[in-house]
Image (cartoon, rainbow, N blue to C red):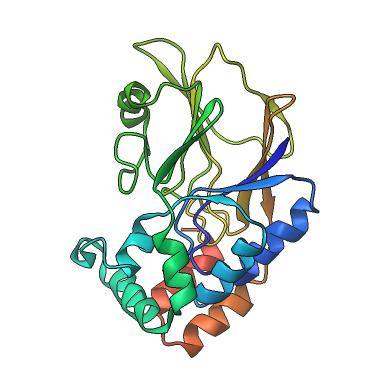
Amino acid sequence: MRILVISDIHANLAALEAVLADAKGDWDKIWFLGDLIGYGPDPNECVALLREHDPIALSGNHDWAILGKLDIQHFNQDARNAVLWAQRVINADSRAYLDSLPPISAEGPFTLAHASPRHPVWEYILDRGTAAVNFAFFESPFCLVGHTHVPILYAEASAEHVEVHPPVYNAPLILSDDLRCIINPGSVGQPRDSDPRASYALLNLVNMTWEYRRVEYDVARTQMRMRRHGLSERLVARLEYGW
């Protein structure tokens, strides 16, 4: 079984299409870790395209915000405005689909959570200390998360020590049950690691390997559509720089 692992599409249809094309159908199932919409210009189109592939999918904090499940006063001004715009344009089918998604789930030896196993909707695992605390909140060997938009792997070397491993692209990494890990595939639609290319991963459940991938997409196409809808120029500009 081969899994295409993606997260944080954020209504960026051009980026999602590029990832699906780059993966070349070399997968049997999609695992999506949440934040399908928010920020970007194509919420309904992204929902429809993802649903075509019958994924195992989670909801994220932006999905909850658009559904009215989170107080958007916790968002910055640009994000709030993007949520309010998406609430106006999202159709009933998209809304119903998002409302059906859980923020955390389990698939064999993997726990899937949008943000973290401790706080599945809204906690940023950005450092080894936060990662170390979260190992106590899942029992499986591996936990896959999104939310930070940064590809990274945290390995629990001991109860006192967590190792941090940056991504190595196009090189399968063997996952061992002896080493518990929290792994983030990065963001499809709004990377924040100073690399504007869409980020994703391929997981082989037979060989138990994880492979980080990056792919360029038509950033200008997404930016043009964002400007057409009057979305924040800061949100538009950041796509070029991956921040």
